[in-house]
Length: 342
Image (cartoon, rainbow, N blue to C red; front, side, top):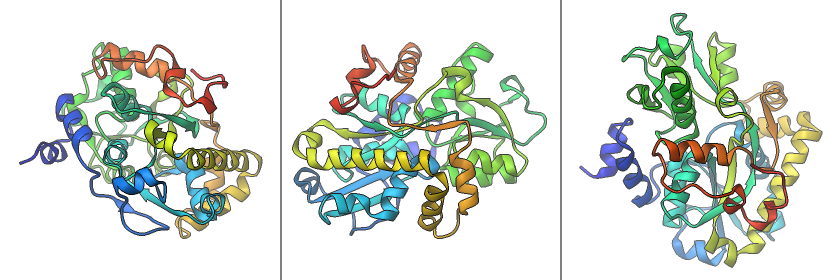
């Protein structure tokens, strides 16, 4: 059995196994949603003829979903082929970028910093939003982390996801040991984790918008939020390998411009943005719900990166990474260096 297969069968595998799996694998299985054809190649990655954008489920990628539905990036790039590919975790996106299958990635702080630590030459092109992501539970027995027993599983996207890092920080603060709940963590994509929480198959879900709101609507409770342990922080950001950015600056400039455009639309006219998201979802996400999620005070859509140093320092302290940046500006391209990041 391969190392990757072992990890996929054992979501709570050791970090060394996680890193071997995520940093040496080619892009894993995915649910591709494309406006182009098939998967990319290393040759396409360097040529800039095709652009594949990898992201995950959720309204935390609202700008990318708006860009996809409206075709803004294709228009800005003169009709060049663009594929939007939905994957289940940040680690899968990282694998795809390492293999050259994905040119533009989007995801959380955890997988990005693990890649940075292990020598992946990439930087942030844009943040997408600051968001307080929540640990949700339905069982009234679970009122805090001390109430979790060995059989109380916590669903999250992966062991180096931003969700996992938040649980570890909360465990350190509440239980005195950041690894105390490691054995409780199980890897599930957010849509499946939502169903597993509501059906009682898992005890809790460390989640994100819109899933945390949907779970709240169906009787789940917030046990803690990421802002409780990390303060203001970016949830998702867009990142690019430095070599690709150097060879395809017209593409990365266009991506950033369209992310800024979508961010402005969300902030200035959330009703219009919500209508686009309803179309993008094929009607599964109703515009009224999308508008409620977009305007919830727990989330602010911004291209300015926040909280990267707080996460990096903590991850280094507990051994998730060895090398933390000396400043947040080490992590970003020039277009972000003049902002008030952290």
